[in-house]
Length: 113
Ligand code: TYC
Image 1: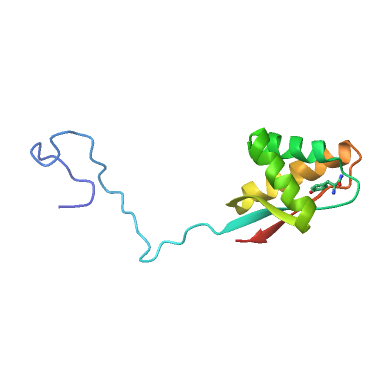
Image 2 (image 1 turned 90 degrees about the horizontal axis):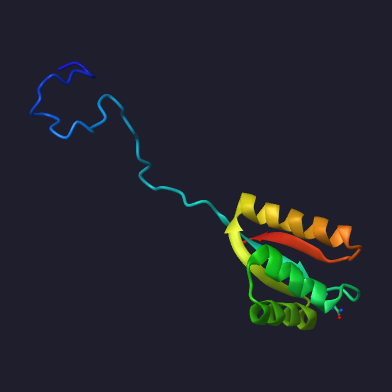
């Protein structure tokens, strides 16, 4: 039978089978690598602003955002979340743009998880 031949009605009773499309599956599929979004401490950004950022861009509730903000304030750095590269990069840009618009020196960066 040639590829694409499908005239035997018993061969495809539901009619929803794709014919002639070959797909190749990797032996070892790679999961997309993950990146941590890190928030850095500074002496000037108000705590309330950092909490607002964590709620707005990382979907944290007030309690969680306050905990992460205080961790960063005390330790110097903290993890806001872990995402595929493009999402992590977008979040970093959103945080940095929002901080800049509000004239705060808040810094956010990426690190391979
Ligand atoms: N250290 C800042 C202050 O005392 C608060 C702060 C917390 C700033 C976390 C940045 O990522 C940060 N106002």
